[in-house]
Length: 174
Image 1 (tube, rainbow, N blue to C red):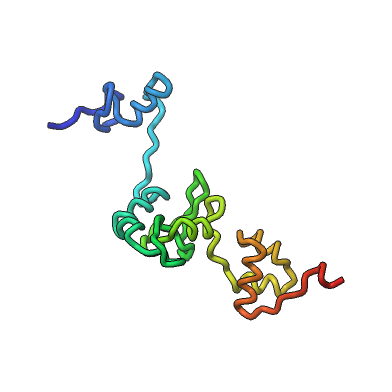
Image 2 (image 1 turned 135 degrees about the horizontal axis):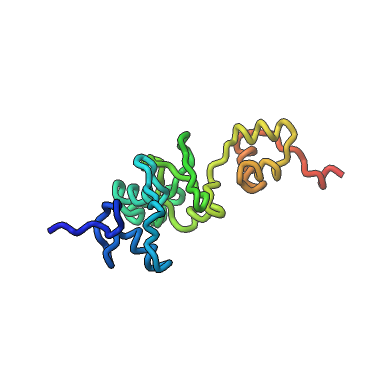
């Protein structure tokens, strides 16, 4: 048995409720009118959304809870994008960075996920070569941190770990 089509002329989507497809039914519920003259936006094929990619990662690799955290070996809760995709995408609604490649996601526990993501943007990956170049050219750790979305302490820690000589603090110079 096939479902009838939407009552809006030219729609062609399957019936959902009150004679309308899902999008027209939602418009009818919100506004009292299915707004037949306004076309329903279709997602373009090949354009994966942030949430659909996370769903695909969960389907292909299983729930994150079956894995141990990549950061601390505790029990993982989240699949987290590692920030390494050269073809990185950004969710237009919230600004979240993501990749369509499921291999670029790592299982993380709550604290490691929180530590590597600030305000919805992955910040755990620091371009140390760029930070070193800027620091040696005279930029401050605070300015580099603002540019690379990292804290000044994280910038200094990464620079020290890579053997970059750290200038004394301005307050210490006096």
